[in-house]
Length: 170
Image 1 (cartoon, rainbow, N blue to C red):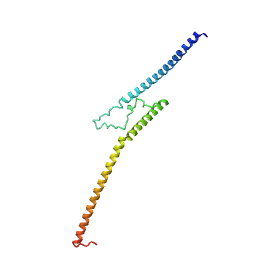
Image 2 (tube, one colour):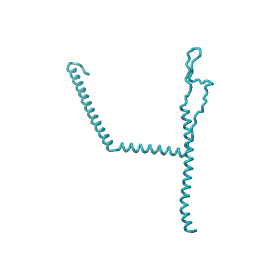
Image 3 (spheres, rainbow, N blue to C red):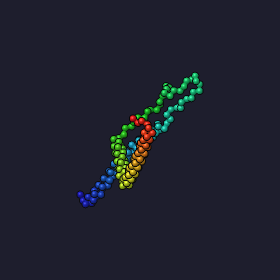
Image 4 (tube, rainbow, N blue to C red):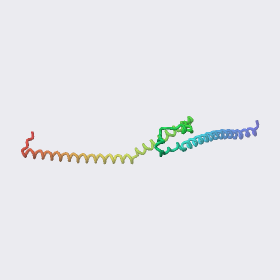
């Protein structure tokens, strides 16, 4: 093998590898496009089925002798003509992808929520509100205590006034 042949081989091998890779990528792209087209067609069919009118409107009965319309009754001539949609199996890779994405989204939202909840601004705001609520509860408790003492002393004065008036408290 001459040097010229070696250079020729060295130049052709990467081109052949590149051509092979391009062929594989094109084949995979073609296969995915066919799958996507089939999925789009099935989804379009499902959407058309969902958007189609469900049933005829109930008939209005003006004649009392004719009978009334019963919603729970289905006449023989009103049978369902469209098939009931069936659950479609999905590929294992698609399922894993959906689960992984959902898990990542949940983890990211939890992380963002924790980061926001544990931020210094949130902690200071919470500390301030707790301190404010504690002070309010103390003021309320002191006011209730004072009111209870006032009522107690008023009852004692009233009881003392009755005993002085000659009532028998036994």
